[in-house]
Image 1 (spheres, rainbow, N blue to C red):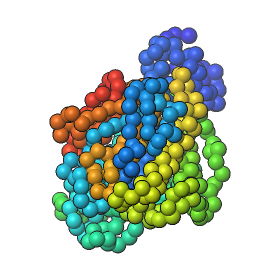
Image 2: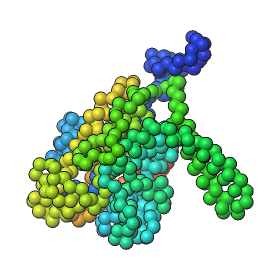
Image 3: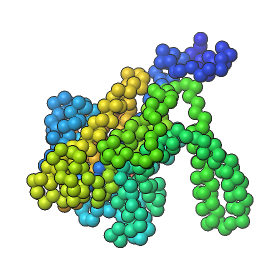
Image 4: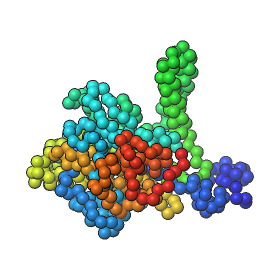
Length: 450
């Protein structure tokens, strides 16, 4: 066979109608480690796991590198994955390092300095910026998940949603997290409603074009934006209802390995968290989406952790205001450790999923794990407790502690990290939010063509 032969040509030549799996042995068909090898490579996924109300500041630390890395009791569950984590110190959201709760939560992924207002007003978050790029390749652009629901109405003179989400699709559009596992499962796998919607969208597009002709220039621009959103939805329906992978990388699963969840969420907090993590993992493993955010608890959390040994049966928010009380600090640390255990659970699962070319799912993800403040007692947001898990398709070294405490203030901005992660997802951006550069030091990275 000649060197330009590909799998489509092989299938045509054989008169076959079956879609063969991608065979790495035939990477020579596109010139060895060139086009075919690139297509065979698993995509990079981005995730954010967030827990609210900070950490016990005395028990959040890491020292050293690789297998010799020392971890505090809080981070000890990550010991089996020392080489797969990067602990980040002294990053924060610029101009927003203390004060009331609400601006220290919703701006975690966008770096916007929120203003007190009666209607939501923030800025697009980095997960949604990435989703607009990576979401073109998947049926679902992104998942925004939660365990504790976002509230409605106002709290403290601002929209309550400020306390319950970190994902924003635009300045005025926060995305409340989905807390029902069944709803998440159906969004990933139930396409019957999408098929019904397709004919409705066709009618909407036709009517919208007719309406546009009678509008003024400003309203025409608004209508164009609306029609584009309808076209985007049509494309998503097309991807969701007709997936074709004739060549290149294939997901390790073609059918879900989880049963459809019950109609109501689990009453047990730990079970609920694990179920949402399992759904997130499944969405990545089947390449239903490449971007996911999971909020374990909202800010000013009412969640209780009395089911953990030695933990006070009080609300997390109250425990975080410990005033150096020994009992509260001990409970605070154990709750933090419980959240770290959820990351360790996910990493163990990802490390066991083979994605070809000698890589696992853990090699091909970037999971930003942490909280929106450091010491919850003082609402201290100057040193966000952050762990980056995974290797970003080989562009993140792992096994290190990166401390930016000696850097100038502008190089301590969390949005610098967001830029570096977005670039590793294939976006050609140099700035985001209040960033001044892409965060250095994560590992060797060659900018992807966009």
